[in-house]
Image (cartoon, rainbow, N blue to C red; front, side, top):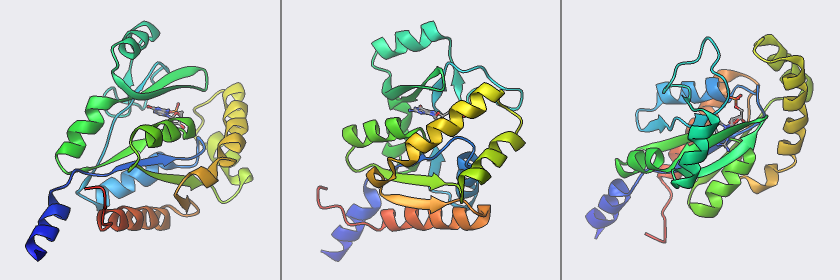
Length: 202
Ligand code: 5GP
């Protein structure tokens, strides 16, 4: 009986952990910290029609697609969810998520709030984690410091941040990214706790 219970916990598919939070909050850095600290997690690379920046790598940061290609994949049912964010399309490949979960790996998905809520609707055992900055002023400072976006884009991201933060109560966990190492530790604690959760449906 005990062997059976433990075996069942160990053999189940990996969890799907959605990480959302305003653009510029440092989701990518926190995620990288977690991936380095935990061998059982993988990031699922998503697709976008946004232009690749000089420091981004195809297939590592995103799969960069033309709008035509993106639309054709929508028609093929390629995406678990997709959304129009900051003037571009972004979408999560369904197969990418499933392949990792089938290997028992916990999948980290860095997507926006509307995407996170869509995922939760389709995958009810997905875990929703919201990362916030310690303040709006700090968020603006981080967005400006990374020198990646135009003024128009920065203002759009700040406006979107306020809208996203209003939806926090629809998420399950909150991590304040005040200091990277502590934020990584807290996110890691969530992942570990979710691994230990007894799932009644299984
Ligand atoms: P950025 O252009 O700064 O890389 O990303 C803009 C926003 O799109 C971020 O909030 C990011 O989390 C979100 N995003 C990235 N990939 C996806 C995706 O596949 N689906 C959705 N819904 N949002 C995504």
